[in-house]
Amino acid sequence: MATELNIAPLSSWGLRSIRKPIVIAGPCSAETEDQVMSTARGVKELGVEIYRAGIWKPRTRPGSFEGVGTPGLRWLQRVKAETGLLTIIEVANVKHVYEALKAGIDLLWVGARTSVNPFAIQEIADALIGVDIPVLVKNPINPDVELWIGAIERLNKAGIHRIAALHRGFSGVEKSTLRNEPQWQIPIEVRRRLPNLPMFCDPSHIAGRRDLLHDIAQRAVNLDFNGLMVESHCDPDSAWSDAAQQVTPQELGSILRALVLREANSVDSDYQRHLSELREAIDQLDGDLLSILARRMDVVEHIGRIKKENGITVLQAGRWDQIVKRVHQRGTEHGLSQSFVDVIFKAIHEESIDRQQHILDNLT
Image 1 (cartoon, rainbow, N blue to C red):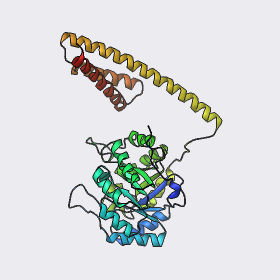
Image 2 (image 1 turned 30 degrees about the vertical axis):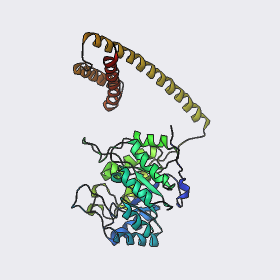
Image 3 (image 1 turned 60 degrees about the horizontal axis):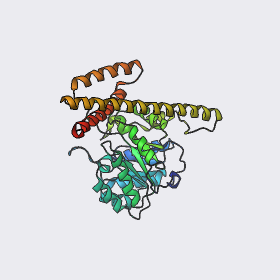
Image 4 (image 1 turned 120 degrees about the vertical axis):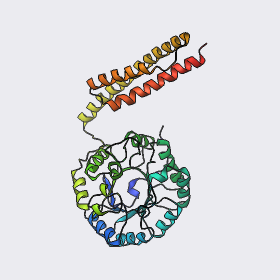
């Protein structure tokens, strides 16, 4: 069921254009006044309207560069005065909110390390009561739809109606070519639950490498995200933080020009008819899948009763290993990825174990 929130459209954000993708660009960190101004002029030439820069940098460990702090806000005031760019910064606590508002910052974003903490979010929401400012909420570092929506709800209840989600990927324990796993199904679920919520993507923090930025940005555009936040630096190799994922304004321009933009829908009658036919086929196949799964669970419960009668444990690891090997092979034969097959059959296995456990616990 969709969650009902009072969300204002992007047309109320004061942008000259809301054509997708809206681009937010600027350095990971504001380092020097010259660096901030040089980068701002560069992204301005691309048609970017919103300039980002990290003022306070919450780092994983102390001792790293943690931002220039409040003095950097004066540099952003100069950016706005000389280029006309709107400015956006990250706020992680009430002090940051007050300093940003006092400096006339145009938009705010809440980072992943903050959105994971409902207490911190509530304090920021309380500090913004009565303030009319757009706020972007990054997903929490762990993949939790409810936590992300909860952060958005807290801010919305405080009167922040110009609000958007910002997808930056999720931390994981396994090695990957990406800095943070995108897990696209999670922002898709957030959009399903909050259909009027604008959705932005931060390909810089998902990729972690500048050579992967285009592919992540293209995926977001393909999924009809409203905008992108990309880290851009006048001299990225010399950046004081996250050098590997930043690009020059010129490189950013090349990435944006290479994006293939698509419409969310079409009024063409042939397209509508063909799509309707294919969706009907999908609906039929989904029904067939559910019927097959129900029959499978009937067999699982019958096995559970036999185990109960014969004093056999529910879990038999050898049998599960056999199933995994078989479905991997058959999945490959059908052109299905191993990761997809793993997700599906892990869920089926967990449901099977639960049903058999229930039988052993309750069948007399």
